[in-house]
Length: 337
Image (cartoon, rainbow, N blue to C red; front, top):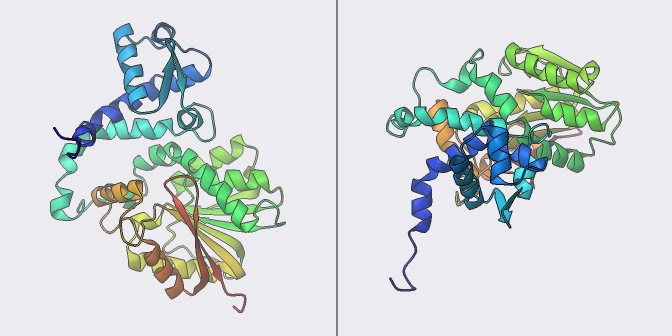
């Protein structure tokens, strides 16, 4: 093999990607990153704590080093910064539940690959069913992903320092944005519009953080539930656009605009694709998730969001990196209306 020939290594890693899902799933199911965070760093210590076989523990640790989630030196293992931030139980940014969710879906994947032929899941798209148990698992599993996005939005719009803010969270899920913002701003109030089972989850989170007195829930479908006019300073639409069609997104953006005060801001948080569809990697891959679970969803470009928001009557559309696969699109209602 000459030096000018490409290596097959990356293709082998991609084709064997199910091992990455399995390794991360087993590690989080056994709280491995949490134990390492608390000082158990050798294979023998971790095997004794988790009940995993010594050979299995060593193989698991080797695999996690290969995935770049652990480092090793002199027989001891340490979490990488990203693993320590996102995979240690009890931290607000913990997304180990997401790894469990993906592990549980592995057995179903083979039966879902026909969506590339049919163009969608057909008659029962998972994301459009209010009482689907899927939501309880998903909204709690991904909550930690949104902490950096909430903090970025706060920095851009001065949420922490603006008094008496009224905020509307459309499809707010776990309530994680509300938890971050109400924790930063003692005079703010948030209203979350979502299906009743999901609002119940959010109220539990806000109660745990002693913030429930400034958090109101409105049960209903955000496509049709009546909303008051010119009431809110800020509205949030997080991880919703990817499951909606372009036409529905534009319609909902217009509904939200009507409920904002003049000069108010809409924050859209989602996996947004570059205009030439060359990246980023995760939003491009996530489109397959929407093909399997929605009839009209996908991952949309910056140009798409700009067009939809402009057509819905917004001005000053800007995009902001969050340090995660999600991007913020922030648009403003004119001060003249």
